[in-house]
Amino acid sequence: MTAPAEAVLVRVDRARCIGSGMCALGAPGALALGPDGVAEPVSGYADGGAELTPELTDAVDYCPVEALTLLSARGGYRIAPAE
Image 1: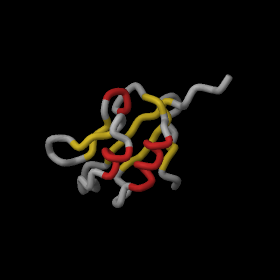
Image 2: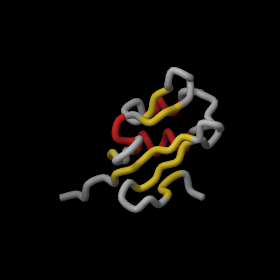
Image 3: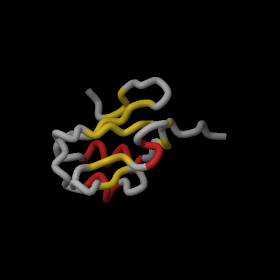
Image 4: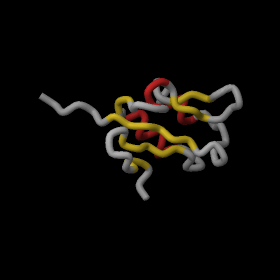
């Protein structure tokens, strides 16, 4: 039996985001571009926490301006990107 995936929150630095859309393409279940063209977390990723997936981790890592941060929904500590 495997342990459940960690629940995470996604934070977007709206001042830094350039709306490249790479995050929304890489993790469409977690991130989308809002009406203003800036990335935003969807559903539970904004509050409450949702499942950490490899696609989401990759999307955070590949953000060209490092505008995304993953936080533990339970502990609040930073998961990605590495500091």
